[in-house]
Image (spheres, one colour):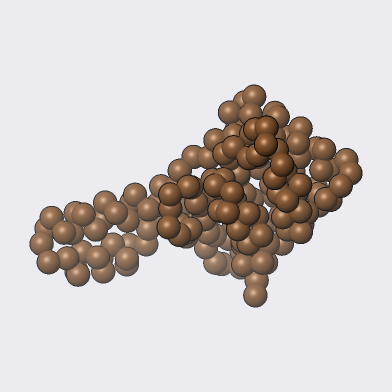
Length: 169
């Protein structure tokens, strides 16, 4: 199991009654509001800082962003599971390390599964040339080849994530 520097953006509308369960998932994931920042605790000043970050993000049209220096396999499983079970969109990016590629993971309501693509050092997803060549070789017709390449490039374009806001429960 490897650990990677990873960030996650969360957006959507969360009932205010679910803020504490979100904070539990955040605290258990040992993330901060910026790189190299202390992990957020379930109660206390750092939990209030998350709420204020949500308010600032909502005003600016930006998602809640969280950062972890050592996410196992570049994933925040508890945060992702919380987001999926509460209909919140997310996009996470793990930094490549030791000559490996990074990963971009995303999910929005309506998706059957989490999307995942390899990413470069800037967090931009990419399609490997060998995968494109294999898809072209497997295509029975030119139309099928074009469709396969279009699907690959569509998968390499994760959605932008909007702000995270609370609504009265």
